[in-house]
Length: 139
Image (cartoon, rainbow, N blue to C red):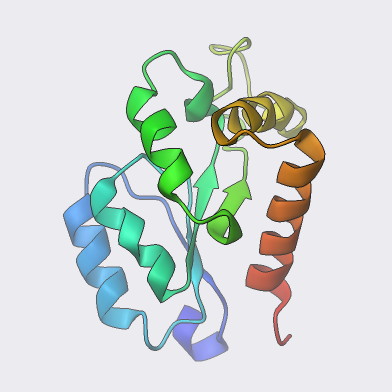
């Protein structure tokens, strides 16, 4: 459908990084781009930015066990980053275990700013511009 209607594809992949890469890589020339929603720090998927994919970063970044995501985040080109929520799931710290809401993305943004050494204004401008490019280009 994404190819037929020339819309970005949204992918939520869990424990299927190799398969996800193979499928997306196989269709990338026909797709107008997409999002790896709730990106899980897979080095294997990281190269998909070259094929027009964006990386959605959510509450997992704030978890204590997110060391790999913290390590990989700076390797993602800034023009391919998106700030996102997985509400009502994957609630960021300090509210982990409670129901997630879009308002709580501020905690994800704070952690992204810390990891990427960006001001909040810089990060929000980057993510806003990336969202516009992905979802509204040419429509």
